[in-house]
Image (tube, rainbow, N blue to C red):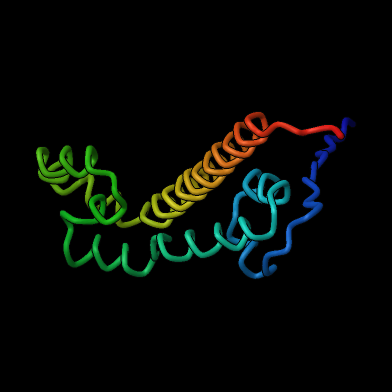
Length: 143
C-alpha cells in the first residue's frame, strides 16, 4: 500500500514584526516578501491594507440588497458592466454570486495585498536610485 506524503513548505519570515493576528489574513508569499523589507515599510503596508481592505459583510449586503453593485464595490468594473449587460445572467449569475461572495472578496483582498506590496517595493527602488545618483555626483577630496 502506497502512502502519499504531503510536504508542507513553510516560508520563514525572518524579519516580520507585524501583529500575528494581522498576518493570519495575509497570503504566504506576501508574508515572505514583507519579511524582506524594513519595519517602517511593513507598518506602512499594514496601514494601507487596513484602509483599503474590502469587507465581507459589506459585500454580502451589496450582493443581497443591491444586486447590481457588488462588483463595483470590489473595483471590478468590467465584470460590473457585464453583469448589467446580461441583467445578472437573467438573475442566475446573481444567485450564484450570493454563494460565491466570500471567495470573490478573498481573491480581491489577495490581489490588493500584492498591489500594495508592489507599490511599496517600487517606491523603495526609486528612493535607492536617488541615493545612488546623489552619491555619484559628490566628489571626495583627498588631503
